[in-house]
Image (tube, rainbow, N blue to C red; front, side):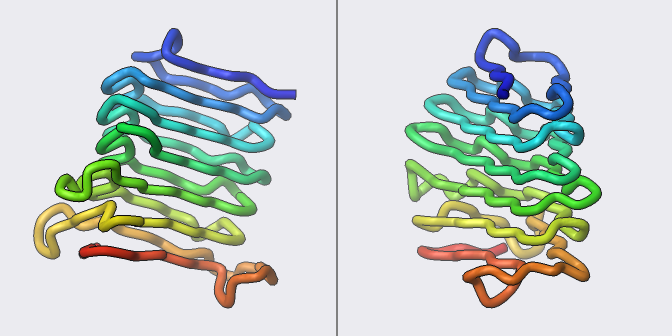
Length: 169
């Protein structure tokens, strides 16, 4: 079972229902900027930002306690997760964050993102096409990788940061 939130649910805090997949999509500029998304009781969380910018900028996103989370920026969306604070639940399984950049001259799509995955089993963050730029001394991104993970998957480690293009984090 799944619950879907979309453009009509913008500009407010969200709590995903317990025991269901939580699907959040938006095409609205700054839809959940600065708001809290609590998916801690959800089975899985899927967030997709398309078409407009800063959809989840400055958002606090609490991931499922025991399920998976996938956060994706696609289409012409820019700066979707800039300055977002993303926190794993008590035993989040897999966290995948795709910081796809439609404009490689922009570089700000996941700038200053804060990801605390210490209680997760696996974290993967993808920065294709130089999709994030964080000045080394100004507004750095921070990633706290899984600690004590039991991950035994196809990757060699429970924490993978994929970089391509020109990226500083």
